[in-house]
Picture 1 (tube, rainbow, N blue to C red):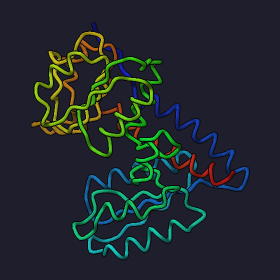
Picture 2 (tube, rainbow, N blue to C red; picture 1 turned 90 degrees about the horizontal axis):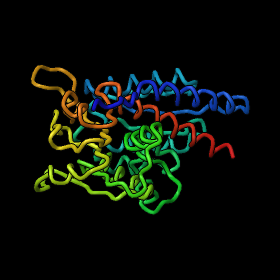
Picture 3 (cartoon, rainbow, N blue to C red; picture 1 turned 120 degrees about the vertical axis):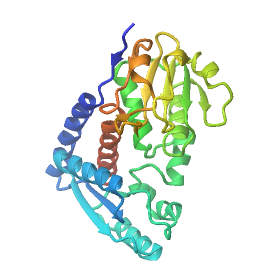
Picture 4 (cartoon, helix red, strand yellow; picture 1 turned 30 degrees about the vertical axis):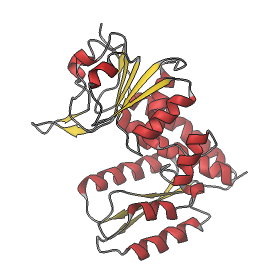
Length: 283
């Protein structure tokens, strides 16, 4: 068996085209969706992520406001800026790029963002909405994974899904989204005993731990769908995921590549969340 690819680049292109169409509809009503992105410090990876997010906004017709600050920015100054953006009617989404310098409490900053503009889906109110099945913004990476499963018409009801990773950004919200679709969910992590015993029974595996190629072919039963959230560098400096793609692709039914899988979908869902925030404000 050779797995079929779930192409994140192709799916992102399709979804961004729909976003652009809806943005034009809003613009005809005199409203341009706006996303404010705040970057503090000179972290190289953050600069790349922010640049890609701003570019995606511009290509879809959204108004993107990038604010750069030095690493010496104080927590009070950042909180004041976030509160000002909360009150700005032209801004529908606020994204503070993580990580932040050590003098700034990231959680305090996240909680300062209005839940109505929390397009990253990290606010405690967004987490509560997801847990209780109420409307709110879903974190972009697991939301993108759900869209990828939808794209292959994968029926989650009754399936056994194993999520490897328990972060607040991916693992936990991923599990909740799968539960909403009636999957039976097992969450595994660094303290899980005999990980292979769990993954070998899975119909779906979401790997999100940040360990290069940790999921190998012998850990996957034939026909499993595998979503690789990992973004790592191997010993040779090459980009790779949490899944041993060469081996697992010979066992799985569907698999996402790295790069070109979940990564593009994360940014796409940020655009979707910002658009939906603008649409709600226009009602």
